[in-house]
Length: 110
Image (cartoon, rainbow, N blue to C red; front, side):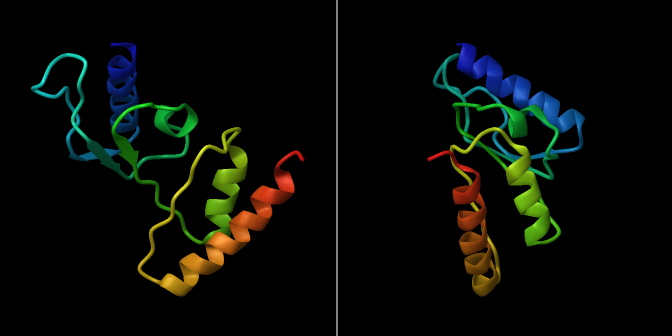
């Protein structure tokens, strides 16, 4: 139940900071320990979901201006578990992945 409580806390915090629930956002009809798959739009980098692991079906979407902006956000986080980028421009997203990979490799202890 702690995981479900944490999901609810992360959603409430993100919405308080301006995020919007696109889908889901509540406990599942299957029972108290299940949560609907949830997508949040317009999440800010200072929200809890951006600062802590959720361990649940929650996908926060954070906008960024350019590659430098998103790399700065990634480098500001102490976590390196997983990051994803979806782009309408495949060439730009490929360039970002290569650049981020180099930046991440350079900051990762051997």
